[in-house]
Image (cartoon, rainbow over all chains, first blue to last red; front, side, top):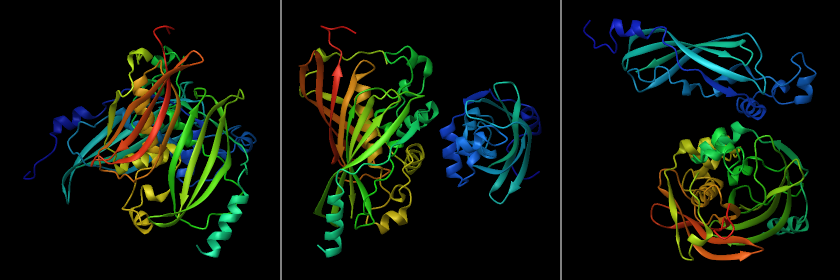
Length: 151
Length: 150
Length: 146
């Protein structure tokens, strides 16, 4: 290989499976309301307690991507990897339980794969991580598999 | 001064004393934490539950200007004759701490309207008195806020 | 927290330790989100220019918050902020160095409480006072311990 690489094969392998520390956050009604407002989603399940109570959920729930807002960057996984510029290349979410105000959600990130690819701007690392969100009852509420490009 | 500005000013002067409908907000710990982070104030009374519990307040409190995040309902008054606006300043008075879990009811009253010639042309100064009351009926703070439209 | 500022230790004319801030457009966006004030003059440069402003300007209420922090940092846990006022006379812009400053103007006892009044202000990088104000606090007294 003529082009410089960011990580050796061995370094890449050693990263796979690495887990972050868990980070816990209490979910607040006002935060859900402001998040829904910010994404422009007027669904009453996110902002109208009376209507939400009469719904199948029995109360306010969070929009699907709300979990992005609970400071998962504090998880800090992979921030010491090469490449100071980061792009988000997409997420695959899977949902298991609704997220409600008052829930304590614990997020743990795990590195699933690290690949290296040449981009126009030079070699880039594609870091695939999976964040698991668990509520206070030990129920897995969602997983988010996302690809970050570091270059 | 154009007659349009004149009549808008007169209508607003007549509206002095008008009050807004009350609106109630719940204070959330995470909101206080994000607000304190946004203003760059690391005081543990705003973000560290364990330390705050050992303080004279016995728990988390909100920074002095946090109540800006709880705007009152708008006043049922005529629109000002200009579309651009600036914040002119605030006079706060504090009576009780604001804590997570508090329910704060906000009401504003139109207190004063003045027209002045400014650098950017005629400017309308509107002063509103905002009262913040908690779930125990205690007035926690008042804010006299001056808005400028030009 | 921890250190206590007693009324007896404050003298008229005394300076309050200044608070230095380096606001960025990112902080203005954070403040917009946290406060709910989404007026475009604080993040949309074209909008601000069309309003006859020099560019994006700092929320007055954010400068108000720094004046609040100036005082609460100084008085500590056992001081109580009673009044906080400021007037936005000049605009401030992100990228400048902004300093909150203050000076004790008066101390007195009323109804057994120990008051201190201060003049406070925001100074821009050129040393101009853009935002004058005042604050009134109650401090603990050595004669009437915590």
